[in-house]
Image (cartoon, rainbow, N blue to C red):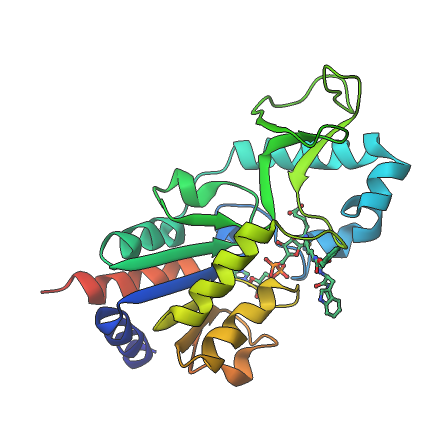
Length: 245
Ligand code: BJW
């Protein structure tokens, strides 16, 4: 494993442009549940009931109760060594983009600056009618489901199944995947598209692709290096190879 970590470190040192895709696994060590692991959210709840526009239309209160519960959990969480190591790697890399599927905001809290939140952010809420979003960090929320001053329902500003991602964010993510020298995919099952296409696009455009995950995923067969283990253990080790003189 140490030689794999050193090899990824060498690639990062030589790189001008680095893109990183993170998923729920990067926040697992902060105590935030993942979706598809044993005991994960989608083992306990049906996405059709909680993470689709149809579910919200059917029962906005139920969907909001679930998001309010997650907001309370996330409010108590802090960035872990994986988030901190990625913020440090950004500081020493000429061009860097962190593309996250996570809605918990922990990358920004750890000090990452160039962050694309592909699936939105749990701390922003959006008016169904007007489409305008604003930050709201109240936990727990009073009076569920919340309503806008215009009377319409407010919803979490996140991307549910069947909804398009922000076209600007998606275009920026794919451009970074096409242009980077090194692409890291960390703590994602690489199950959900279009995010899961990013490592494939990076590989097809000549990037060195490394994956950090305790288990093999859908994209393991195509990556150049699979670093098996927890992000909070492996990323600080990679960082230390970069900062050694
Ligand atoms: C560790 C660890 C540790 C554990 N260290 N690692 C092609 C075929 C079929 C369907 C589709 C397709 N293309 C698109 C679709 C539809 C759909 C989709 O992908 N479905 C698949 C399930 C097949 N995609 C969509 O609907 C997307 N929209 C779209 O395509 O729009 C098109 C469109 C255009 C025009 C008009 C209309 C539509 C939207 C996807 C939105 C996803 N939303 C969710 C929930 C909302 C946010 C929230 O509430 O949090 O986003 S679902 C959920 O999955 C969440 C996540 O961001 C996302 C990805 O999950 P992630 O992060 O990979 O987590 P896990 O749990 O799966 O994996 C965790 C990993 O961590 C595991 O591998 C562990 O081993 C690992 N791990 N501990 C490192 N310590």
